[in-house]
Length: 162
Picture (cartoon, rainbow, N blue to C red):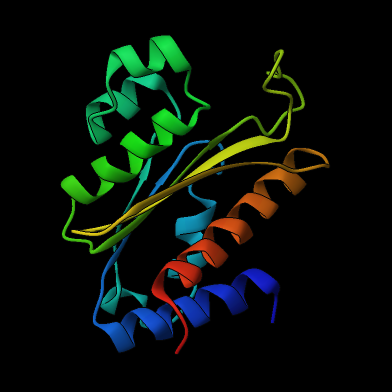
């Protein structure tokens, strides 16, 4: 079993135990997180929906990310993923969400935001919102894969131990 499959399976078990639903908001991972989640048999019992919002317009239309946030901070920012995670909850039946936005490469890096920079946010309905930025090494595929794994592990951390 691959690491991603193992993490997604553990996540599904924990969500089922806690009777919670998940929504995901993805940019640089392009739906890879939703794919991993839906690869788990029975995921319809705990996965509500996924938003792939690659463009800024999609982030605004589907997740209610403010134009001002995107203009001031950019798509790859903690402010943007905070709004993406909140928007995923606001536009779904989910109890828990995760948002991912980053620069997977090979181009797109800029001063202060090199290739491999990825921002994450995890939100719980009625609970805290956690945000962090990580830097992953490797090619586009590696950055995206590591981002999905980090997002899944973060969801498990939010849900706590069995």
